[in-house]
Length: 263
Image 1 (cartoon, helix red, strand yellow):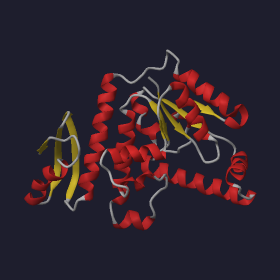
Image 2 (cartoon, one colour; image 1 turned 180 degrees about the vertical axis):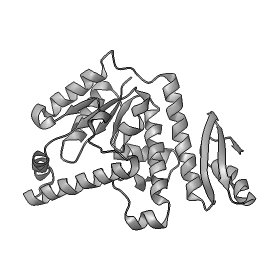
Image 3 (cartoon, one colour; image 1 turned 180 degrees about the horizontal axis):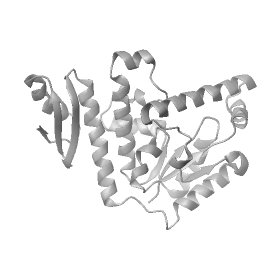
Image 4 (spheres, helix red, strand yellow; image 1 turned 120 degrees about the horizontal axis):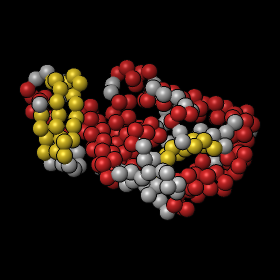
């Protein structure tokens, strides 16, 4: 099985490359549309899924509420839910960071010079040259801010990737060939049963954390653990017994949670 994360800036023809790779490997592409469908299948709302936009929150949003944190937890939950299948091409949203520790995914960066990317956008979107260059610059700045805010990393850090390709030089067809060839390498290990189980626990953990953040429960450092399937253990500090007693009610609304222990 092949699990691939594919990260790219705007104007790199990455969507076509992702679909060519997925077709050859007979796996799904988890782009924005598919990830939103996965989120809806998980019981999330369209408001929850606003966090799938790759841009940092504004300063006022950070100041007045926990919405950015909730959206991040939701986004991570959806990525882990997609990854627990053990195969597929996951496009963007920090997937290369979230799945890096499991060592069972191929992390690919599709890149290119800003000027060549602007030319691609001119042809694709019928833009003037200055408008295309401005779009490239603004998009890169948003992506950079998104990664630094959420993951404290630079999205183009080469240590996050196993393969970096410039399709402007080799073409989309050859770029897809290179990714497929590497994904099929015997040296690349698929996700073990233990890794899949850990990814599944993380998907549910992030969902529970988001649910607790959405409430008005006053808390300090609540910790969520999934000791076994269907069971959640919540520990930390709340400020009154009423809030403590509300926690199981909130957590049991998360699909797949049957039993809640509060410490």
